Length: 399
Image 1 (cartoon, helix red, strand yellow):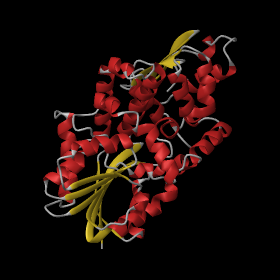
Image 2: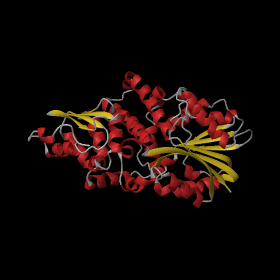
Image 3: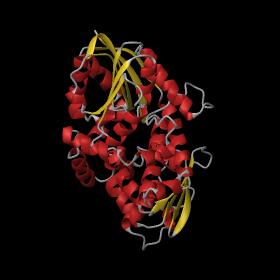
Image 4: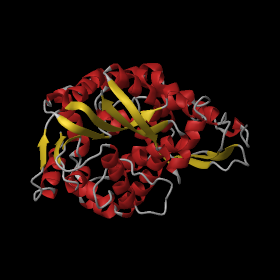
């Protein structure tokens, strides 16, 4: 596909980075982009495509940032108001489907990316690093998360199971029921939850008669979950690193905590599962994943999520997760992939977040923070919709 208007309109005073960015945009092969700049606008791409997005450049300096640092530079420019759009998810989907053409705009310059990669590596999830990294994200305050999560305070993908008419809280409860069912949670069982969040799954497991031990590194989450389960004698919530666990459990649940482990500690995590599971016990690990075809490039670099949202984070591919589990003596009994459900979950979080912006501001969060979180929701939504990332539940058994 080609631009619907010649690139010759770009005035000579436009910075070199701006001219290069416009030239790259003019090479779009999929979808349609309305590009608006301080010096004019143009329609780019396939006029008949159903995927339509707009990008408004209000400061030419944005182009230099993007070309240097890829999606991290895009995030910085968006945060600072140098670029804007009427539909963030569509713009990001457009970037994903044109990734081969827009390589530099997505991945940035090698030197700048190396600096960002070093910063990411310095945030590794050692014991001290994990406490710091978790604090930066999850201890923003329970009042903040309460504004846009569902009533059960679930901060992981819901499971709609094909029924998008149901409410978010119902889809989150359906996910918890599925986890409890697969783990065969029942009276008298000893259940461990690694990364227990605000206590939703613990509450359901206790209701089935299990003794439940939940651990987290977030003081805000620990306090909330402890208050939530204060009347439940079978529940115990504590601040603890997964590496320090030494108990024996009939079942282990870990819902979207594995992403915060870091590749250097993946083996340590699986060793812990084997150490803590009784013979024949089951573990259910829900994790966001990255497409195996993109894993090596992802591993060699860093991205917006690692730099701004989850420092120290690292996604596995489904294939690598399964290989590691089996290498550590765990059988993979079942796998559920439901990335589109996560895209829907993110859409609903985003809608709730946007509806409560006045309350977000009242908590002391400024416009750059709001724009970064708006981008976070949209970035992930687009990734799940286009299959660049996914989410899976892996049911494991110790033989």
